[in-house]
Image 1 (spheres, rainbow over the protein chains, first blue to last red):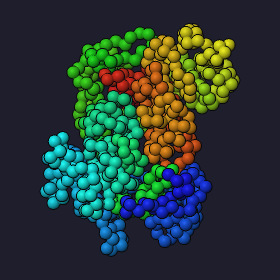
Image 2 (tube, one colour):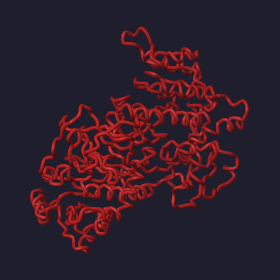
Image 3 (cartoon, one colour):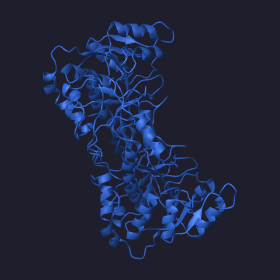
Image 4 (cartoon, rainbow over the protein chains, first blue to last red):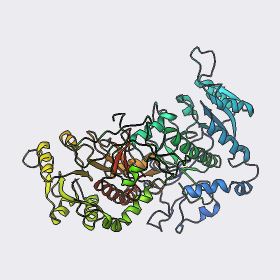
Length: 307
Length: 307
């Protein structure tokens, strides 16, 4: 990332390059945080455009503030009812496409959240390599179009990478969410949706990630390594398996008595919560990019706080 | 590990092979745990020898028990003064050698714990590749012999691998603790001390481990990856960097505003606590090995609980 970038606004239009505001000479975004001993560090910035309240733009120096942590993030979901009312009326919901290969529990969870309003988005397409999978069935029941990708071996069914991109563009999809999709994403799609494609992986990346690490294999590997902690990771997608920039993580303990199924269930519970929180932030344009290229989530309650 | 092993006694004599009790057909040690939904799972074993209280050996079936967690481990350190009194009088302290390349903060922390009695051990030798490092200075001030390893390039100073092993044997060293030692441990030493060499690494292995990942480089890598969690890992040592079986871990958050130094300080604090807890367990022979080869720590308060 250009070293001149301090914090850039995350733009919902994936083709429009993000604006480059003036920067400080600090390599890292200086934000106050409760966990930090340096309680009086202040946020200083010059001319930085981002979707904060007008009050934030005026107040160039901030007193000690609390950093958003997991608990606060969970409060964001609980307060969703109140927050919905405060949103500007008439703001269009973000159009989402979800990619699934299996049962689609994350997809269902996200779809329900969109439906009940805690996520200001709309799942308008499901993409799958297995048109008979649980996720595809659910999509059809809900009237969501199902696209097959990639092509089958005989080439009879399924879309090519270019056709897939065209189909998503036609539907005006703004964000692509991978939720248990086992095929590699083609470069054409990544280029079409820079900083607009997310994946969820059931371990604390970069551990237990990469080719071959999916589903129960991940949890088996975690347990046999003796790792005492695991948890879901959500990251932006690049051309390789599980290597894009990390956006969010949660931690769960790994117990001495865990079977892979025990651990999988514990991690899955956190996956559902985490993906919903992250997509809510995405749809509300609360993703910001640190100078070194790490994406951060801006708190809904306090736009000065980032996690 | 031999599939017939159910749970093996960890013996302080590193050349004595652990006894092989009869096994069940269960691949994992079935222990009840408070976090598990299956609250009434029972512990089954047949004539398994291990250093538990006599009550444990008689009771073949144990009711729902709470699993030890990190919090319980900390309580074990607080209660150490009382525990000390309950110990059998005259039990010899374990002899420890610590390997250090730098400042030696973990070494100092463990040494102080030995002196004040919360760790039932004694550091009888310090090994270093840099005889003028902080750890070596501290050792000399405390009259702990300092050994140089490996040999310098000109071969004038330092021990060979075999001489090192001999020296440690002469000191009757039972456990080797690596605490910021930057050279690879020779295979002679690993063969001489199977399951008796520990290392501490400042990340959640297997992430950010391996050759080149040491000191501040680890924390820099963690921050640029965008990982939201880090923490120390203690593991047994094999012939490669940072790849032996994990024995204990602690988690700390990585904040959006962290510099590598901030993160390093937060992790170091946990390193000191964790290493002391683990070395205390080692000296009290509370390390047991799960059937799949993962080492576990037995709770001091409740011998039926493992972490």
